[in-house]
Length: 358
Image (cartoon, rainbow, N blue to C red):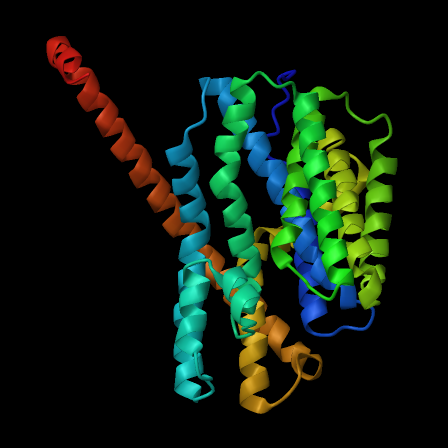
């Protein structure tokens, strides 16, 4: 299935995260020309699908199997501490300022339990933490994807066959999303298509030679990102804009992982851009509820106070990232230590007892 390509650390991928979060934040402040910036979510999804699938494939090659428990513990350690910190701090702020609306507790519970997409779909709720639908959508996919991937690998599917299957899933999901949008129904869960597009790219990269002109491919990707964002200015073209952004992201990712010393990769890897990408998850968590709090407290739209809210959000994200990163390391270390102790205990058992218990 593979030619042994190992991804390693690609700093330019943090730059792509920075592009994604910039699109989302500019969309939420109603910046002129960025009405389609909510497609930045699709950029995040594509990158996530590519990275997670690549890491799972590399683990399979190194160890001969997929470690599901380790995968889910590391997902928990990466995502939950920052989410909990944001919910606690924002809840104190919202409750202390007296701007909590009826049902606020349910909003917090839905965000914490990763069920915001369900509450949006069934009850049409739109609150301070409405943006967490993306986190839940991603986790729904990753509950099933490692098991599905293991099944595909056990059946000895080639990388090309896996890529075609995920590309077909991507196309079907985006087509269904577009059809429902035209009928007046937006099912945000279908945007999981972006993740499957990233999964497809992970297989393509392992089954195909590197692109001959990666810089040109990166420029095409950047152009498609601009076009996809521009299409979002018109509601009727949103269903076209999202897959355009996904394809652009695929091109950009493939470009920078194939030519890591290219000009495109160097620009995306610039320190300020890469750092913004590194804290993009935390910035995504914080910016929307901070916008909502300012709006409820001062009755001012984000476009009027963006010059205050964006720096505050960046500061909160940077601080949260620093703390959450340390918590993540502790959780991962404790998990690895516990696993090592269990392995040592099994090794120390007398062989007869082991056989008896089996």
